[in-house]
Length: 360
Length: 258
Ligand SMILES: Nc1ncnc2c1ncn2[C@@H]1O[C@H](COP(=O)(O)OP(=O)(O)OP(=O)(O)O)[C@@H](O)[C@H]1O
Ligand SMILES: [Mg+2]
Image 1 (cartoon, each protein chain N blue to C red):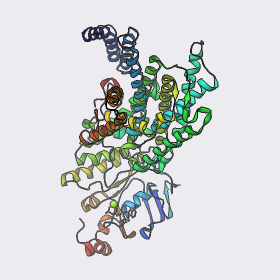
Image 2 (image 1 turned 90 degrees about the horizontal axis):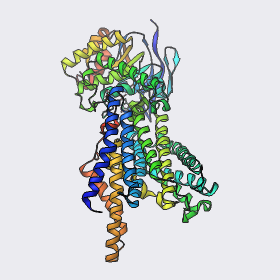
Image 3 (image 1 turned 180 degrees about the horizontal axis):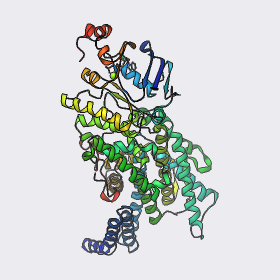
Image 4 (image 1 turned 90 degrees about the vertical axis):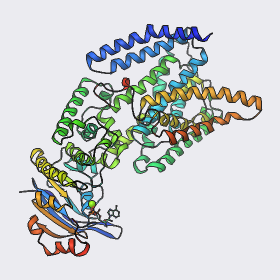
């Protein structure tokens, strides 16, 4: 396909779907003084837009796959942002929670129920399995939240890092879920629709939480824990709660990931994976969901692009250049830390994710 | 007058250092009570003990007759003690309004689900919290900065913001740790008026630590003087100001402290 017609199609579909929905949302939003209609309709517009592009073949299967991956990373980055950026608890084991979600949901769909996607009703069981994975991960979040009550900064980072590695090691050694081979033959239930819905729900829930008394408790803990406690906030409860909610959404993302790739493997959920999500949070801006969304998409696309380029170069030069990706991420993180400490967005949000009365 | 805060025989050690020594006293309801003493004499530690940041090695603390010794700070706050800090502890990247709203979190009733779904009950509560908070900011002359990030406020405003945040928890007893520190004479004047106004308008008892003798002499109705963790004088400010031991503690060892 040529470049020009693609762009024209994009524009045309955009003006048919996205803009009408956005303006309806705008009107409803202004009439009711609430931002939820605007946000929901904007999301619906974006969803339909990509869906149409995908089903008409403007975006081929590969592009749609990367978009799906990006959306899963949106959920992962946003949920880590709740723990790390909004509550200020440095966590390095986020992929551990995703692993719990992936393996628990995978166990249900693949090992226990041996679901077949073409059987009617199977999809509902799959959704149930994803929720179960999220709940299991949330419980794990509660467990990991407890060290955060006594540990701060570097020490907490080390404990959460250890947690991620422990999960990985345990999975490596349970032969029921495949051990080091991984859990294979997971049915392909994940599609653009459910992944988009999950990513949107993650963003919506965290955004609404932030704009509530609960959210202000999270933020106050990040800002100054002692002052938060002396403002009457039960900091213990809220730190554990933050881990539980963040972990729960990571679990859901993990479950969708497994049912997209049709397998779950211990190495997918190791330290480097957690670092990748962390880079997204920091690159986007600590505390900014808008930033997490932008960073998740850019870095996933960058990562896929790099994979192609590096593999090609590697074949030409006969060098293992694939591993260079991790070096590039590390460099990226260092550059962010040096030149734009606050990330792309700082702690600013796009208008869509704010409340009408909030001016900042 | 009954005692709102009553401390009985409180002692606190940091390792081998006796920071507070057999401290006993009552703060009557409705007064402005001053706590003074040279640097390192145990004033802030006393506040930290009252608010549960440390557990006293020995002794009991009663708030309105109820034993609060050893409770967690947030519980003590909820039972009616608000405080500010000697070195400011502002939620600096939150807005001025949110600094106040955060201190009202514990009174909010909406659960997680209704908050996430923004149900009518939640929206009504949010509206109420916002109004209450704006009223409070109004009283403390901070309303026009409500939407600014707290970190952008000048120092004097931050001191008032901390007082506002402490008041937002709806305390009966307000502990102020050196509220006039770092203020210029004009600001000190305003602060003195503010503290009196806050006492009358919010019906709180004020217990304050201060190095500015002008503040202590000007607004405190009773004063207690600490040195090396021990009380060396207690009474009306003008009497305490003439006390020989006090003069020695302040002037004898370290020159004019104020
Ligand atoms: N957490 C702590 N650990 C060990 N020692 C401490 C601790 N906090 C305070 N101290 C010591 O206890 C003593 C009393 O300190 P405190 O902060 O209560 O003094 P202060 O009267 O508030 O002095 P200032 O006027 O300088 O604020 C000092 O010797 C101080 O070094
Ligand atoms: Mg002090």
